[in-house]
Length: 440
Ligand SMILES: Cc1cc2nc3c(=O)[nH]c(=O)nc-3n(C[C@H](O)[C@H](O)[C@H](O)COP(=O)(O)OP(=O)(O)OC[C@H]3O[C@@H](n4cnc5c(N)ncnc54)[C@H](O)[C@@H]3O)c2cc1C
Image (cartoon, rainbow, N blue to C red; front, top):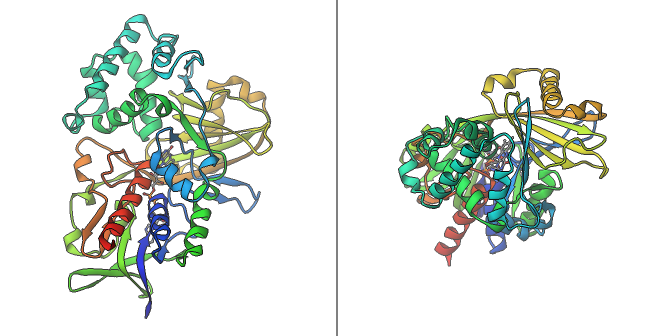
C-alpha cells in the first residue's frame, strides 16, 4: 500500500529527528516523522506513571552551557527559557566517607574561580592540586587525534595525575559526562568534553537542566510545530526496511508493509537500532560496531530539600551521580540518582533499586533520612548512551547524506561532540541544512 509523497521522511522522533524535522518544516518542507515508540523523545523523554499521575524523565539530563544547537532548536519552539543554568558551577563529591565541594566563588570569574575551587578541595593534598595544573595545560594543547586510541585513565596517568585526583575528581566527572569510567572511555572523547567544560570559559562551565519534563521541553512542542506546517508525526510505527529504486532510497516501510515515500529520507536511529533494519548493502560500515552503555535512574521526591547543590558525584555507591532539582511545589526537591554500572544492575526489582538509592543517600547525605519521601520511580535504559571506547571515534560517520536519497543523523554521528543531546541536535540541524542547500 503506498501512502502520500512527502518532501522529507524522518525516521526516529528523538532530539536528532525532531531538530531535523522542525528545521525542515521551518524552511517550508512537508515532513513525516515515523517513531516506533508510543511517544516522542527517544532517549530524552518523560512518561507518566498511570498509578500516581506523576511525570518522570527517563533519566537525569544535564545541559552544557554551550549547547548552542539545542538552544537553537528550543528557540525555534519558543522553549529555550525552560532550561535553567546556575550562574556558577557548584558540585559536591561524595565518596561515602567524606564530602568535598567544588564551588566557584561569585567574586571570581570562571577561570580563576575554578583554580580557586580546586585549591579549596579538602580531599586533595597540595601535590595533587598542583598536578591538576598539568591537566589544564595538557587540555589547552591537546591533540584529540593522538588520544583516539588510549583510555582516559592512561591519558591522566601520562599527565601525572595522582590516584586521588583521578578517583575523587576525574573519574566521577567521566561518569557524569559520558556515563563511563575513565578506564573504559576513549581519552579523545573525555578530553573533548573536559576541554569544553574547563577551558570553554563563561557559559561552558554552567551545567543546566530542564525546569519541565523533557517531553514538555521539546517533544510535544516539536510535534505541534511540525503539524502546524503541514507535516505529520506517526507514533508506534516501527520501520523495518528502506524502500529503494535504482540505487536511490525512496523512503521506508514498516513491519506491515506500509510504504512511506519521500524526496529525502533522514534516518536518526541509533546504530544498534539502525543495524536491525534491512538496509542497502552500501550502507555497511564500521558504524555497525558501535555499542551503547546502560543507565538506570532512581528518582526520589523529598518534601523538603536535602541537597544544596544541583549536581553531586558519588563513589563507593550504587549510583554514580545525582541531579537535584526543585520539585512541583517549589519547596520540595526531586533527586535523580544515576546508576551507570553494567546492564546486570538494571535487573534489580524496582523496590531493590529504590532501597539501593536510599542507602546511597543515607551514606552520602545522612540528613536525607529525616526528610519525608513523597514519591519515587525507577527508570531503566539498557541502551542509554553511545559507548566511547578507544578507537570508536573513527567508526562514527559524518551526519548528512550517505547514499542517494538517504541521510544519517543522531547523537552517534561524528559532529565534533561526544554523543549527547547537543550532538543529536547538531546532527539533525546539519542533515536538514544539507538537504535545504541541495534543494536551494
Ligand atoms: C538515562 C539517560 C540519561 C542521559 N543523560 C544525558 C545528559 O545528561 N546529557 C546529555 O547530553 N545526554 C544525555 N543522555 C543522552 C541523550 O539522551 C541522547 O544523546 C539523545 O537523546 C539522543 O538523541 P537521538 O535523537 O540521537 O537518539 P534517540 O533519542 O535514540 O532517538 C532515536 C529514535 O528513533 C526511534 N526508533 C528506533 N528504531 C526505530 C524504528 N525501527 N522505526 C522508527 N523509530 C525508531 C527511537 O524510539 C527513538 O525515539 C542521556 C540518555 C539517557 C537514556
